[in-house]
Length: 279
Ligand code: GUN
Image (cartoon, rainbow, N blue to C red; front, top):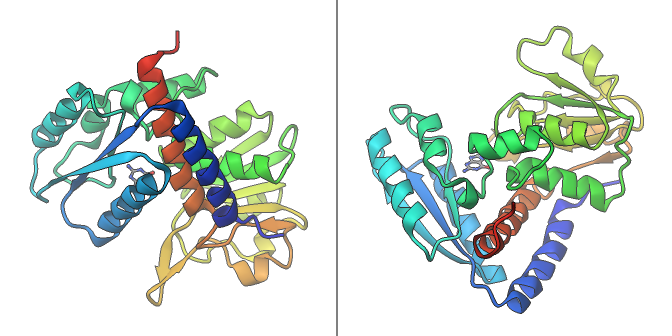
């Protein structure tokens, strides 16, 4: 089975569009892009286009590649104060001279639609999530859509990033899976991945997950967005793995579209919270 993120995201976008229309709200997202990295520019453009499709207003702030931490923090603070803006997204990675944690901590947690502020990551760990990072949220939504059981099952996440691996491990744990978090220093990765009933790879190493690493009947989620010969390519060797797994996400058309729709859902959530904050 193909876990069709493109299709599920399209359905959720339609539902979100209706929800926004009937809410009477006019949510607004602000993006902050520093420098001119072509991939980051593309991702930001896709996010603005997606906003337009569901009735979310969006505006982009662009800073030069030599911007300082202070420059970026000042823009974030302006957006925090701007009563028209419900959600703020600082596109990562930031140039090396910018201290990313200081920037992410400057974002008002109530407008933090990426869910990267320590306050939102902490809420996730303590079991009262408010704004959850979009990629892990999109993966959970996709698994839920296809009714993939998680309780009591062995889930292996490869990659321990703050934006994907760590929050996803927390969400899978909250869903009662038994979670193993693997990373670049894991010894004998294949022996861990072979035990996975749910296997998620988020390393950015193209085609590094091959059939012998996958248990028969596993559900495999590919978060990779690497490039091979100039073509977008996931972490999973789709051709061989799809013969062993019971379900796989394709790249493109799997996790990527789910990430974007989750960001839009977070933006509506942030807009609602500004009118009626959670206690
Ligand atoms: N760069 C790669 N993934 C992400 C993401 O989910 N959010 C932001 N802000 N930047 C990213």
